[in-house]
Length: 126
Length: 281
Image (cartoon, rainbow over all chains, first blue to last red; front, side, top):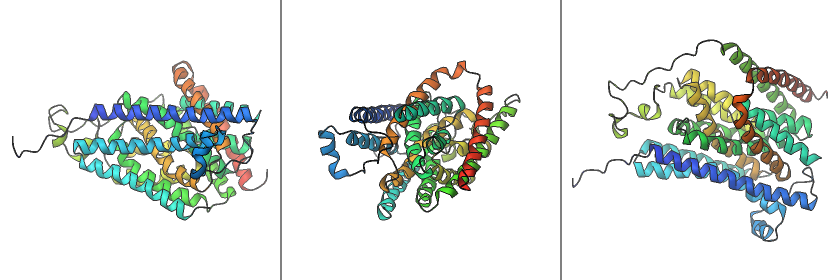
């Protein structure tokens, strides 16, 4: 057996189950954070049509610690966006472990496009 | 009152969306523009958030049931995400009136597609091409020895025409980013009619893809201040609750009647969007 490559791990079922679990947890956590922020809006008498607070990563932690609605709303929105990205990252790891190199390239390509959208959004930021 | 409008409206979009097999964006954007007075771009930013939430909830179920084709979905996500990136950048260059006109065209397209589907529902469905395994079934033919096309295909069907499918994905991504929809209205017919994927698998796979597609453009909207957190939260919560209700009652509702009612509403909304584009109303 020495010198022979290891066979790829069978991942059809487990990978899909793991990704499903991540999507499920990510969605529930996102909605829960949005719900906490929404409760803060109700308690603070904030109208949904009031000027929206801007996303400021520098003050996000302090807003969360102060229990402000805006902090939870932005964390929830970031969790919404992070969930599909996490799904692609998880798939990339799974495909590397199974040595499915075409799918590794595809997963890396998707993450590349998402990274490019962050860079381009940053360059063209209002 | 405003909060109740967004919660109930979002829930309605979630229920109707899951009953009619839509991501919800086609309903949320008109709700926020015509109902709440938001600009199309503001409504699209909120809609993209709702679409991602909806996709996450639905895709997890489809993956567990092995209804979605993970590999095919991810391959097509390369093109839908690239299209969404381009669309997200273009969206900030277009005026609200142009976007309203595009949305009206989309609504007419969706209404026409639904009418055709209703007419076809009584006809026999085309059978998928059997998977050519050269006399070996998938269990005998291990994953390591199959061709890439085999690995993208599923039980009972062989994926074909990857290039036209990917081009369709770019178009779906651009439309998704411009109009705040998931893109399933384009990708399901592309996968089914062009790539030979059975309708049930195409629908489930599209649901999986929608999250990544919408994320690529939502990042641009987020970083350019195009997502209103105060509007997004109640609407997304409403959509999430509504979609959960819709998934539970889908077997007990006469979808044909609902579909016809929905077509009429869509055509009315399309007219309102045209009037908005012409700045008449």
